[in-house]
Length: 176
Image (spheres, helix red, strand yellow):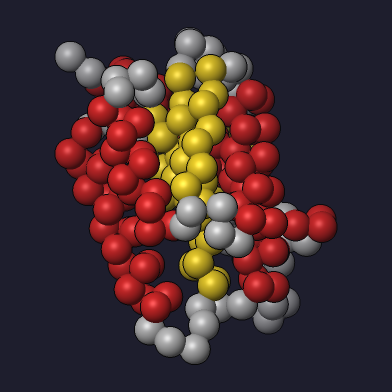
């Protein structure tokens, strides 16, 4: 078996100017035949729409053609929607996409914790990849950079699409 070609996914530059070691070396995966679901929040739609587009682009670059995208109001609703999709039995994996931006109250912390725990639980309970694509940002500029809005930074949705394919292939490899 030939060694897969690797491509480097770069993170946004480190603001202190020091050379970063962060980033992923991602092989090229063949996800032909996989059915991937995406659940995205409509809240912070400029960011979420860009992240969905990045995920879809990455999935297609891995030969995934069976992609279903569903939308919910906000990030809090994502775990329940992902659960419904998993229970349908139609998906090899789900990508959860949302964007939480810290405000002046504790709301950010409560939603972040609930969504994180919900997505983790889905991974363990359903034994299917459920990719955590929830940005937790301190301000709108950080969110735009991590979603590649207007060419700023890097679109993290691309990482999540490739991660979904890799995780689904690993799951299939070891499934009984």
